[in-house]
Image 1 (cartoon, protein in one colour):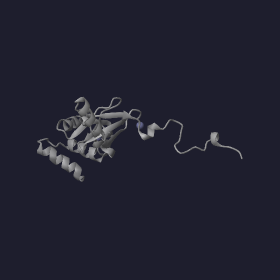
Image 2: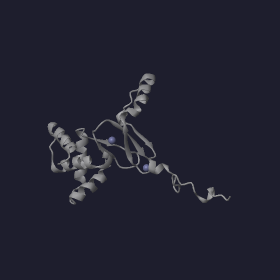
Image 3: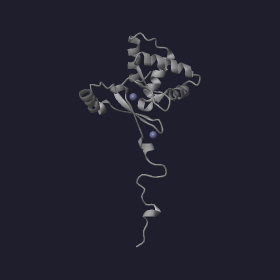
Image 4: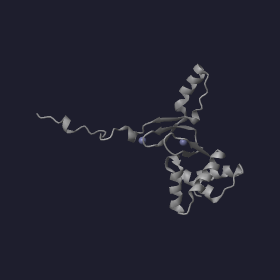
Length: 160
Ligand SMILES: [Zn+2]
Ligand SMILES: [Zn+2]
């Protein structure tokens, strides 16, 4: 219970009348501690079991469902792969690598121009917070077998 961010979220939940069971508190703390704050339920189960090997997978799912219900946690459905969870922090969009499934948060303002254009030209209100853009992450964008910055292969060798 050392993390002030976890504490702030738990305080908010308590104010909303959400019962703070031990598993729910553990799930919130695990979400706060997760690198990048974008994790699958499986990641959370692994993380929680490192502390308590008896932690039930179904408990994690139930806690996550409840946290999504009250709006403390957002669930992002990724086409190919398990749902990814993140805390309701500063608004941001997500880009998802369609190769390794990595989810990366990008600043919310990135789609402002697109949203403005859609509104002005098409009268369409983009739900920007629900947008998940597919693509390739840096690690996956490099074609297999090639190493960035290494151009000293035999093909480039020459004699004087
Ligand atoms: Zn990738
Ligand atoms: Zn996110």
